[in-house]
Length: 96
Image 1 (spheres, one colour):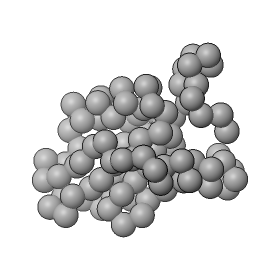
Image 2 (cartoon, rainbow, N blue to C red):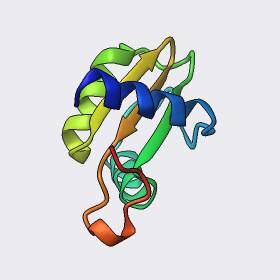
Image 3 (cartoon, one colour):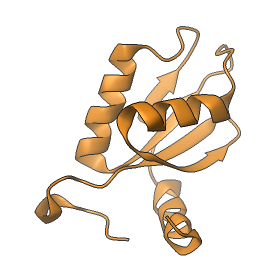
Image 4 (cartoon, one colour):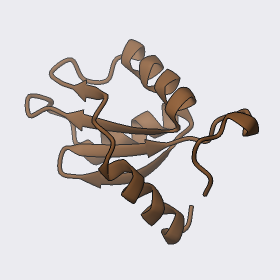
C-alpha cells in the first residue's frame, strides 16, 4: 500500500465509528475471528484500545493484522485502523 492509498483510507476512517474495543482481556481468538469477519464485510475497521489494556498498541495492531490477513492503515494513540480487500471483486466497497 502506497502513501496515497493509505491517505485515502485514513480519510474514510475518520468518519467511521470504532466497532471494537479491546480491554483487560486482551486479544482473544474469539475477538480475532470477530474482527476478521467484520473486515470481510466492511473492508475498513476502526478499533479502540481501552486504557486498562496492558499491551502495546503497535504490537497489537501488527498481531491483529497478521492473524486476519489485513493491513494496518493507521495507529493514533489508542485507536487503530485496519483494511482488507473484499474477496469478491463485485462486492468491494472501497477501490484503492
